[in-house]
Amino acid sequence: MKVDYRITPFNILMITLGTALYAFGFVNFNMENHLAEGGVSGITLILHNLWGLNPAYTSLIINIPIIYMGAKYFGKTSLLLTIYGTVALSVFFEIFQRLGLHINVGQDLLIAALLAGVFAGTGLGLVFRYGGTTGGTDVIARIMEHKTGNQVGQSLLILDIFVMLASLSYIDLRHMMYTVIMSFVVSQIIDLVQSGGYAVRGMLIITKKPEEVVTTILHKIGRGATYLKAQGAYSRADMDVLYVVLNPQEINYVKEVLSQIDPDAFISVINVHEVIGEGFTWDVQKKLPWKK
Image (cartoon, rainbow, N blue to C red):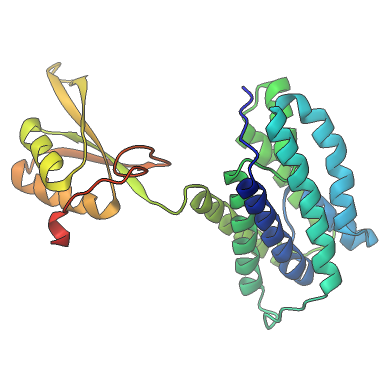
């Protein structure tokens, strides 16, 4: 299914900022400290280190046929934002190389890897959050999903592993391990930026006193709750399972309340990627017991 974002000045601004941050980290930490990377950016680093080719140009050259092949898998607006993000990234690669900034990390590869991860993760997170991409292997992964049925995440992993292994042609194992650290930081920061840094949790509650628990959640915490009809696998007894979405500090309060209302209640806390609705994206006025 093709999903389109609207093209607005704010979207363009944030995608521009994202590509600038990514390019800044790429030039000043990856290139300066011989840290590899996955995807097309990783390929440009291989070409740069083996034959001295400028990533600003090789990135664009590699991405043109990739975007052309993947055009039919994008909506029109998403395609335009992808083209813009790809061109902007190449432009910033060139700008930061010409500026010739040299950030001294004292030959500490761990600091370089962490900083590279922060800049890349923040930059890509902004680009993805506002509807753009920087081309590359994520487009190839979409094509592979359509042709072979492989999930995008699996295809990306395979492609990145291949590029990483090829990068051993110019870096040693020590630099590769720091690259792995950088990649982990990138993935965590991307998730953080895309979710807005707002942590929420889902809580499933199985209790013998659901009405009392719901009353407490509604009136003392100010959160809504949903009854889910369920049946015990062993007892075959029908029961109501409560589902509620809470902030991390509210989770602790509910646990405390449940220990008083029903010490035998079964609780499962799950991560929630995003919540849209009252109390999270809509403002509500309430007084929380622990904030009085």
